[in-house]
Image (tube, rainbow over all chains, first blue to last red; front, side):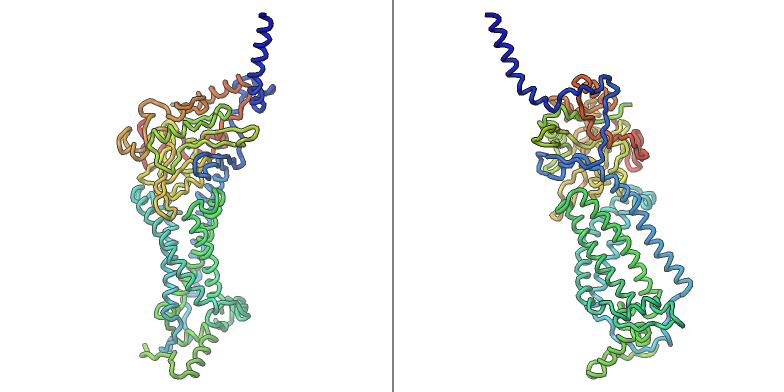
Amino acid sequence: MTRHLRHILVLMVLLLAAPAVQAQLYQTPNPNFPTAKDQVQLYQNLDDQITGRVSIPDNKLGVLVQPEGREWREFRTSTLRIIAGAVILGMTALLAIFYLIRGTIRIHGGRSGRTVLRFNGIDRFAHWTTAVSFLIMAITGLIVTFGRPLLIPLLGHPAFTTLAEGSKYLHNFFSVPFVFGLLLVFVLWVRDNIPERADLVWLKTMGGLLGKGGEHPEAGRFNAGQKGIFWAVVFGGVALAISGFLLMLPFSVTGISGMQILHVVHGVVAALLIAVIIAHIYIGSIGMEGAFDAMGRGEVDENWARDHHRRWYEEQARTMRTNDGRPIHRHRAAE
Amino acid sequence: MARMKFLCDAERCIECNACVTACKNEHDVPWGINRRRVVTLNDGKPGERSISMACMHCNDPPCAAVCPVDCFYQTADGVVLHSKDLCIGCGYCFYACPFGAPQYPQATNFGGRGKMDKCTFCAGGPEADNTPEEYQKYGANRLAEGKLPLCAEMCSTRALMAGDGDVLADIYRERAVRRGYGSGAWGWSTAYGREDRGRAFGPGRSGAGVGTSGS
């Protein structure tokens, strides 16, 4: 009797243990596992992103470990600052040296006193909408990028937080007028910015800088340099707008790695475009006599137009002659 | 002085989410914010493991390194805390954090983020200990009361442990030797790793912005 009982007992134990044995399939004690406490490996080598499942309704938190954050940290804390600092300071230094050597580029034969319409109200509205938004976003972006090492020691933490928070809001809100202005600029000027043969000559002589006697190569409404600015702003602006809006709507289309790449693209393109725009501001202000009038008053001096955009100027003059009712020349008292 | 750490023993975690619930309740964490979560790897397949993950309070915290306003600091116990008065909600800490710990309340309709919120190791924030202001911003300060984080205290299988890192490592090693298997302390090499990146701020040193809390 007791023997039978023992048999049944053993059978029951085996039956009960069966699922446990199965569960242990993947957690069986490893015969090679260290037997001394100090040999147990505590640290794992995690070099890849590890993703699992979470039961909370936030899928991006399924990423358990993302070692790529380390590279992004390196980019944010040093690479981006080096790139942005180098291109912005480098461009400023180049322009300063250029200014010291060449000085302001004067109009040949001085101002004539007669002007010709170059940019109408819509042109200028589009330009300045884009320009003001870009400058605000450039400055606020630089505050967030460089503020910690440069401004916190000057302002202290609470004041810098106020500045940085304001910068964040301005940066986000001015993206809207920027994109609006960018679209307008594209529609208004794309026709005159298509590359042509004459641009090669312009590029070969660097706009007349390398030519004999400072002769300007012929150019239409826009010369190769201006076309370069145009396409840099269009492509750079579109890249900044797309990456920027996706950064404003974090994780809307991409996961953590994508967000890091978007930030890298946004930062690098912004740094390059800021450098390009610094050169643009230089040549449109102190770098060249009479250039600011184009975007300021909208009208440029005839001699300036003849110097820099001869073909365009001649076209304007011809149009004026054929429909004589419409003046493009406006006389004003000689200064 | 103790160096506070979390250790999750993946061989013990049964994905009951009690740690997540305890954390949410203890700190009155708002909707949409998860200071702690349980991630299941190889779900439904052989070798399935669950790991409870929150801020690991790294030696050289990437969040602190990338913060544009320098709002992070580390207490004498090695707990990484931040000041919500300084945070601007830029989201950079989430991109840098290896563990996905920083969380943001939705502030506007356009994905705008409010001030960051994360696990405090139940140690509050820069405000005076156990004041209503501290509770409102950072939740309970159990460490100041001499208690350990509630998630670990709540864990029914003792998978999640919180406390002095050396003690935790010792317990884990003893367990592993006894049962003869173990996949290591999840996240430790990343958080406290052997390749320590310069220890931008090691335990005991506070960030320039805010004083250490009195824990």
